[in-house]
Length: 107
Image 1 (tube, helix red, strand yellow):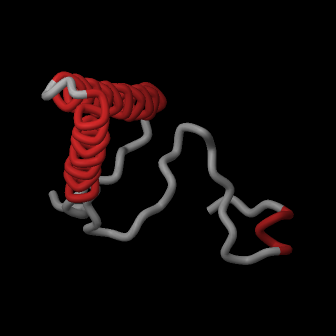
Image 2 (cartoon, helix red, strand yellow):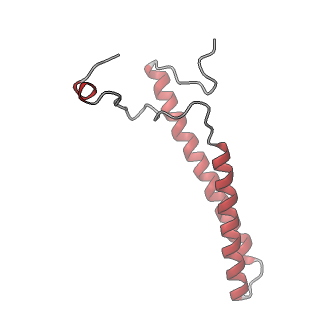
Image 3 (cartoon, one colour):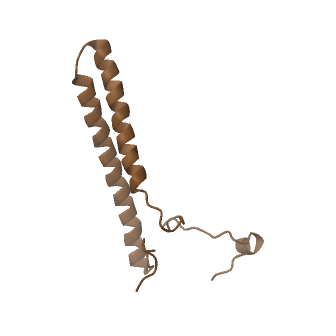
């Protein structure tokens, strides 16, 4: 392990490079959080659309439009998150760094 002056002064603090993902708890998964996020955004846009439709008398124009807009936005966010994660992993692969597996270090 490399030893730097910062680590000598503050033991336990590691330096992070931009290509190195931040450490997380082993076994945690973000899929449930993303699913809840999609559900909440869809419900919020549905509610806003419902209120606008009742107020303007344009049933179901705003409800459908805002739900579609919200879902497109969520899937675009998923795409950009995936793309950025793949760029990090490709850079790590090019540098010869082994990416941490989700299931631990199994042969």
